[in-house]
Image 1: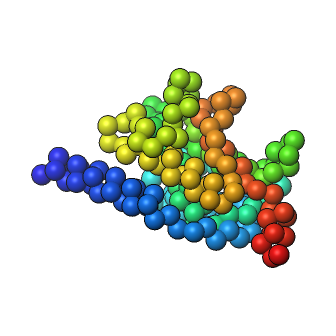
Image 2 (image 1 turned 90 degrees about the vertical axis):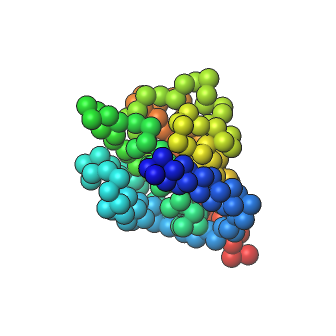
Length: 188
């Protein structure tokens, strides 16, 4: 019964993901105070029982950084990235550590959010494939999470990428559109 239940959940997850791809919700971007939003997200993620409070850290510089994205879709993307960190990282000897770091890129000044974990880096041969639909390294995964996350970001004029030049673990960066330009164009 346990095997049947597990496979049924997996099939249900695949069906839900495929349905989500065929009926994407339209993005309703808005200005979000990143630090406050991440604080609430962190509380929810920790209270879901996925990890302990000391396993997740938050830093946004400047603290009053605003981003422009649909808040519910941002929640889905960041939740997926954090869940992936938990599922692909950590052991009893070395539990997962997740860092949520926000800031502005030096060259373009575009706001970003990094979701960093302490796991082993993704094999460089696979980094081009991780955002492809149905690509997975786990027998229980659907391979749609990162693909859907990237699609959601693109529907909000944001960009999701895997950073290969980090010193520790894995880093997925969401680069948001320039909020001032987006806000002005939304009002026009």
